Amino acid sequence: MSIGNSHFSRGWVLLVCLGAAGLFGGCASGSKSAEAGNPVFFPAPPEKPRLQFLRSFSGAADLGAAGASGFEKFVLGEAEEKEGIVTPYGLAMFEGKLYVCDVGKRRVEVLDFQKRSFGYMTEDRRLVNPVNLCIEEDGTKYVADPTAGAVFVFDAGNTLQAILGKELRINPIDVAVRGPYCYVTDFTSNQVVVLDKTTGKEIRRLGEQGTGENQFELISDLTFGPDGRLYVTDKLKAKIFRFDPSGALQGTIGRRGDNIDELVRPKGIAVDHDNRIWVVCAGVSIGASVWSTEVAKIYDQQGRLLLFFGRPGSEPGNTNLPAKIMLDYKHVDLFKPYAVKGANLEFLVFVSNQYGLKKINVYGYGEFPAPSSAKPAAQPPVEKGAAPESARPAEPAAAPGTGVQPGDDAAELQRTKETADLYYRSMEQYRAGRLEEARAGFVRVIQSGLIPPPMEQTLKGYIEDIDGKLARRRGVKR
Image: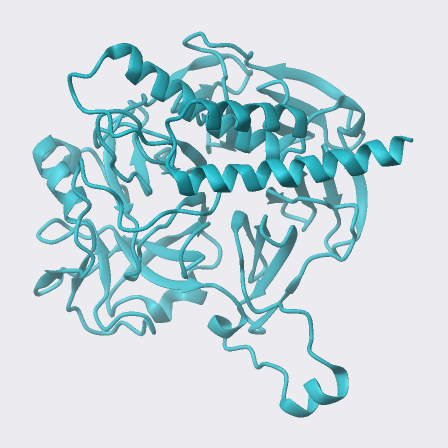
C-alpha cells in the first residue's frame, strides 16, 4: 500500500488547507488511546486517513511501570531520577525495546514495552554524549557521540566492544550500518565518513564541504533506502542529499523556504519500503515572517510533498521541536490495541520531540475505516506571520528574529539570515565540544543586536559555561 500520487494530484490548494488545519479527531470507535477521547488522523477528513496518532511516551509512568514504594525510598534512599526523558534525539527499536538517545541526560534510555520497564542501556562513562544510534539484526548497537569524537559499538548484551573513528578526529552526528561498513555524518568535515565496521579503518568519504549547490554546510542525519541509496540532511542548506549505492551524488530534494513544500531545518530522516522519504523539520523561518515548521513531512522520489503531520502544541499528535523520525515494521502488534477498530497497520512511525511534555510520539501508517465525522482539534493553526505561542528553550532555540517587514532593505534581510545561520552553527559547535569556535559565534550573535533580550541572556549563560570549561582545561594542561 502507498500514499500514492493521487493525494498530491487532488490539488496543491487542498494540501495547503490540510496542513494549515492541523490535527483532526475522527469519531471512529475502538480507539484505546489513553490520551484522547477521539482518534487523531492525518490527513483530515474528508481525505482518506493514512496515519493515526497512537501513543506518546515520556518516561516510566507511560509504560505502566511501578515506582518505588515509600518503604523502599526510606530504606534505600531516593533513587536516581529515571522516570523522565529530558531531551530525546536518536531512536531505534529492537526486540520490543525502544532505545532513546537523551542528549539532556547524556544517556541512552531503554523503554521495554513488554516488561513495562524503563532504564539505561549502559553505565559505561566513556560514552559521553550519545546523539544517534542504529541497531543491527544481531543486536549490535552503534552509537554516535560527537563530544567523544567516536562511534561506540556495543554487543547484544550492551557490553562495549569497540570504539570506532577516535583517531580520525571526527564528530559523529548520526550513524548507519550497511553490510561491512559503518556510515557516519561528521560535523567536523561536513562529509559522510565510511568506516570498516570491524576495524574502524576509514574506507572513503562522500560529499564535500562548501557553500556550493551540491556541498554540505551543516550535515545532520542519514539513512538508507530499501534500494541501497543513501539520504543525508543538511540543516543550513535545508536539503536532502541523495547518493546512489556506489556513493555517487544523485542530486538533492527540497529547498529552503517557508512554503508548505519547503524546508527550514531538516534533521531526522527515514525511507519506507515504498521509497517515500520521511523527514522532520525543526526550526522557525527567518525573514519577513515567523512561521513554525515543527512538523514531519513525506516526499516522493521526485521531491513532491505528499503529506505533513504534527505542528507545535500540547494536543495529542503534536510535534514540538522534532529531532528524529524512525519507521518500524516489526513491532506493529505491540501498538495495535491503540488503533481504531478495523485499522490495518502497515508500520509504525516514531518521532522524538525535544520540547514539550510528549517526548516520543508513535503513529501508525496503514488503512483505516473512514470516520463518520470529524472536528478540528483544540490547537488552532499558527498562521503565517504570527508568532508561535511559546518560546522553545531547547536547542536549537527559535532563531534570532528582527521584526523585519516586507520591503525592508535586502541587505538587512541577508544579515538576519547570516546571524541565524551563525547561531545554529555555534549551537552545533557547542554540543560537539568545539568550545572556542562556539564562544566566538555566540559573541558575534550577541553583537549583531538582532536578538531579543531573553535569547541574549541564554547565550551569555552558554558563554559563561564555556569560559568555565576552558579554564578547567587550561588548569589540567598546567
